[in-house]
Amino acid sequence: MPNSPVFAHTPATLHQLLAQLNQLPHTTQFFVLVDENTSHHCLPIIAHHLPQPYHTITLPSGESNKNINNVQYIWQQFLMQNADRQSIVIILGGGVLGDMSAFAASTYKRGIKFIHIPTTLLAMTDAAIGGKTAINFGDFKNVIGNFTPAYQTIIAPFFLKTLPFVQLLNGFAETIKHALICDKNMFEKLPKNNTFFQTQDINFDWLMPSVQIKQHIVNHDFTEQNQRKLLNYGHTIGHAVESHFLTTTNPLLHGEAIAIGMIIENFLAEHLQILSPNDAHTANNFIASHYRHILRTIHYQNLEKYLLQDKKNQKTNINFSLIASIGSAVYDQFATPQQIQFAITQYNQYVGQMT
Ligand SMILES: NC(=O)c1ccc[n+]([C@@H]2O[C@H](COP(=O)([O-])OP(=O)(O)OC[C@H]3O[C@@H](n4cnc5c(N)ncnc54)[C@H](O)[C@@H]3O)[C@@H](O)[C@H]2O)c1
Image 1 (tube, rainbow, N blue to C red):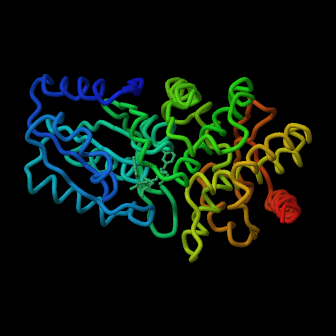
Image 2: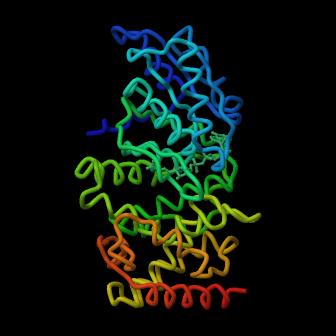
């Protein structure tokens, strides 16, 4: 079972936590993995407090770099520095670096310990919690990976100060998801527009509850046999949308694709009479109030090959987790291609009415 994440609200607290790593018995070496942005924005904040000496491995940023070539690069660096199973890997970055580096660490010499220090909102509330590692392969998102819990996850919200607005909004989609599947009260308290991201105050009061929802679910079902599937809400369509647009000149960020996925899946849930029209309307208007600018027309044909890839499907029926009301959700709901096409048509009309 994964360890609960630790919060470090100030750099001083984070420095204390890092100092404790020096006391870990038998540790041979430390590796710090960063991407080209976190090496500039985040590493300097902790560099003098990391266990010395350490090896830095810098990776290119961006979803298209979450691939086997970069995993091989990490493995090569580990080998060159004689990393062994007593080495510790510290991953300082967003979900792309986190998923890929955790995969590299979890497979090198049958697994070496890694610590997540997420630096994006999406990674703090989602990707760095729950032990899913992954890379993309071929055209398919996260198709190679495993379940390996991090040795520790440290959430330090002050890293968000340098995160661009678009990336804050990207991460907020997963918080909306957590509220919609689990917590009506939290949903009602979420900010109704995104002007709050433009302030310098990054101590969002919904951040810790969002982390706790994810942690609570994965604690009860680490390997996704049952209730962890609820976290896939918005992701069946969302991953297909993300995968498709990654092959175009107009890609979407993960959270943006999930926002589209949640709206389409709400129309689907309404069509399947799982979700009331009233709740579907409330949820969709809330999501649209934050993501209106990225909503775009979707064609079922572009998503089909990705939807059919899902191993949880039954023949051509696609497996979904859907909300049943604001704050509750159900998993293992199956829909036919025709029902999905109907939901996409509803979504396209909804988006059309906005312009
Ligand atoms: N493992 C899981 O359970 C899980 C869950 C959700 C999403 N994911 C994965 O997470 C990935 C998306 O992660 P993401 O949204 O964090 O994207 P990301 O890692 O690409 O980070 C976004 C951008 O912000 C930059 N950045 C990171 N921290 C920064 C900081 N503090 N200041 C300035 N710039 C900074 C990065 O270099 C990058 O350019 C996707 O690949 C998705 O599949 C995984």
